[in-house]
Image (cartoon, rainbow, N blue to C red):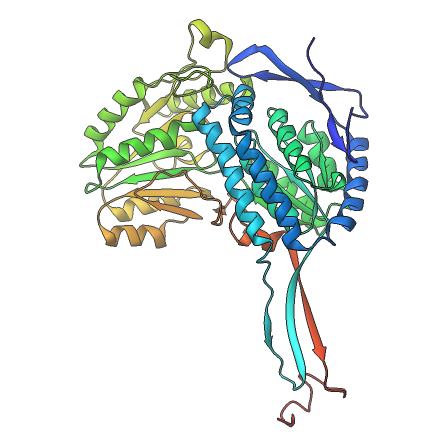
Length: 500
């Protein structure tokens, strides 16, 4: 009998008020049902909010270093359970074990970094313009943070949001993607075992249009952090703006790797293989465009096609697998539709371009790694996010043209350039219109202690990771202490005559 799982609300693992459940299936073998998970509704959201409000009033009074200690212990538990969690993650979302191990490691790194920030929630002490008076600021928590996370990094992205929010003193409500409920539950279990007060964390499962929407609309959730599509992010922006909520958006990307003629080509080749086809292309930072300088275009592309044709598809749990499945049928259909668009626009399919079939592949959502040659700047395959194993190759003549092609899309998350020319590298760092630029590295590979995010339609100015995210999850309070024993008037008519 298939196991029914539960939400975590008000310190208990409970069934949904709706009484409804949805299936969680293995994308490498969709006949395998991993479990049944709650399909929540507004009543479940309301219970979670009220519990989180009580948890916030308790948690905010714990000194920040103590809050950091809980997150550090969580990181230690994740480290001890790394293989168990990685295997569970691969089973429910498909990417190969090396990648899910890296996903867990990102959560571990984030835990240890966030724990240290519990002793570094810096304010400022500055001179007052008046004598016998101190002026300073400090960071304080906001309230209940609603976290809405995607399927492609089932542990890393929730930790990017949750650990800083908790260290800052907020309570959190996590709504993971429907495709990865088990990974979220394992994370919550680790937090509870590490000593997080039970009412500080709430876990709700279900569809975004029911659960996520209710969270965003709820007046007692003042902070929302969302990772997902640009179209959904735009709708969230409208609601949160109307309700005066703080909102962090991390959305799509159409990331380019630029290869200059002086590049170390073997290194650039390894990079695009990993950047384009790692996680089956289901990364917001995936290398979706390859920009090749015309003098190396043909020979580089020939070598790339040869390597791509050797990639092995299959279950991510199998050691020999290079590329796992797409997450579901909808994703498979979307990728196939973009290949149809490429054909209609005259792009040449060098390899791939169809659903992968045969043997065990028939049971999953597999699509052949695909390379498109002759993609033109401004076309759909040059500008739109596919979110699958499809690489668009564009030709350019010089660095000016490469920068122009990179910058013409609506997104601005990640970019990469391979070159030995320091002048080209520094031009790329300053002129590529993205939140992240890599020199001689793939478009993927963010580190936990640095800000992560993009510009234009990729985000709304906030960052995950690093020190900046702690500013998002806290508010500045300014303090003045006047010990002069008399009424002093700042910035009034007595300023010039102040008795210094």
